[in-house]
Amino acid sequence: MAELHNTLKAHRTDKGFTQASLAEAVGVSRKSINTIENRVFTPSTLLALQIAHALDCSVHDIFYVKDD
Amino acid sequence: MNTETLSKIRIVVFGLAGLVCASYSALALLGNSPRPFSPWLPGASGFAAGLVMWLSAISAGPRVAGMAHDELFWVEWGQAVKFSYWFSIALYPLFGIFMALGWIEPTTSIAAMGTAAGAAPMLAYCILNLRS
Image (cartoon, rainbow over all chains, first blue to last red; front, top):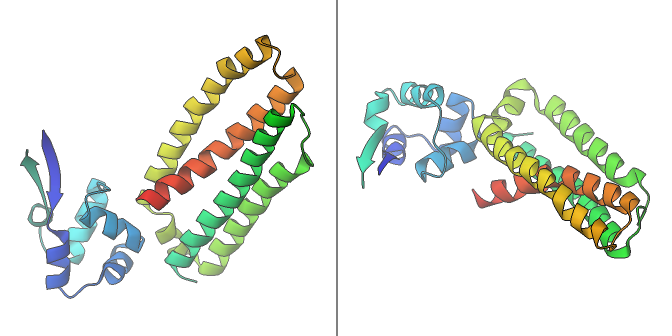
């Protein structure tokens, strides 16, 4: 079954963001960022694009589908 | 006031209001009494919860309030409401059986079911939020 994975934590730390500062930049709670990183919560397309924009990369760089 | 504080306030007030409603329901059921304690208390606790959340959001400002009520909140709240919808529906046959067996009076059923249905979304949200 295909599952959505992400490299958000790696991209975030590379750009020098904390969970709180990235949350502030995209206008969500720190918990949202945390749950996305831990794959507990799947963000909407809009939020995924906002995160990618804040991290100055493509949404495909952060999110990818993995077949298990 | 920041997003974390606002989220914690929300959990506390939802939890307290939910527990008051759930306690009313449980005590009504156990004591077979439609009035185990003041019937104003469940409604008042719900109103107080709404008031505290509203005042907290006002004092935090629109940006922080918006961040605290982001899409994760709405997803979890949506799941809590879905659960409580089916929970509330399931109460009807359950309490129908209780009444058919003569365990509880119809007036007690109304009180217990009403407050259980009120408690369900608030407590379900707290559980979902604390698990995530």
